[in-house]
Image (cartoon, rainbow, N blue to C red; front, side, top):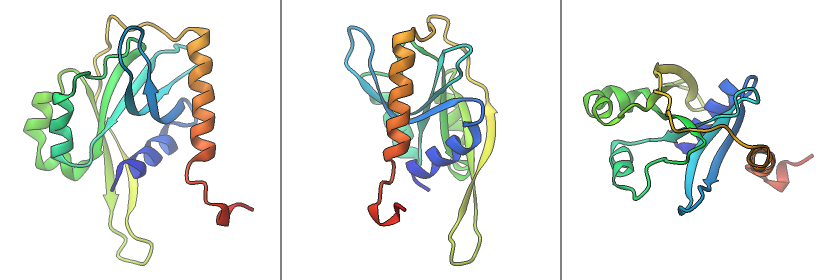
Length: 164
C-alpha cells in the first residue's frame, strides 16, 4: 500500500460530501509552504481538514522532525491515515505522538488472485481535536482550492493510451 492507494481510498469514501484534493501546496502568509498529502472540506463550513498519510513507522517518526508541523491556519482538523497493520504493530508509539491529531485506518484485503489486494476505508478510529486558531477559507482561498482540486484529479494518472 502506498500514498496514492490511500489517497484513492480517502477520495472514494469522502467525495459525496466533501471536496477532496491530493498533494496540495499549503501557502500560509509569512511562512514557507509545505505539502499536504490530502485535504478535504465542505462548502458549508469552509474549514480544511488535512490528512497526513503514513505507510511505515519511519515516515511517521520523521513527521515530528520537520521544521513545520501542519500549521496552516485554515486547517481546523489534522488526521493521520495509515494501514491498519502499521497502527496495530505500533499502537502505543502512534497514540503517544498523535498529539490531538485524529486517526484514519485503511484496511488491506488479500484477494489471493491476479487482481492483487483491495484497500478499503477502515474508519475514523480517533477523532481530531479542532484547532481553536483555525479560520474558514475566504472566497479567494476557496476558489484556489477548487481550481487546484479540479486540476489534480483530471491530470492524475494521465496515460494517453487509456484516453478514449
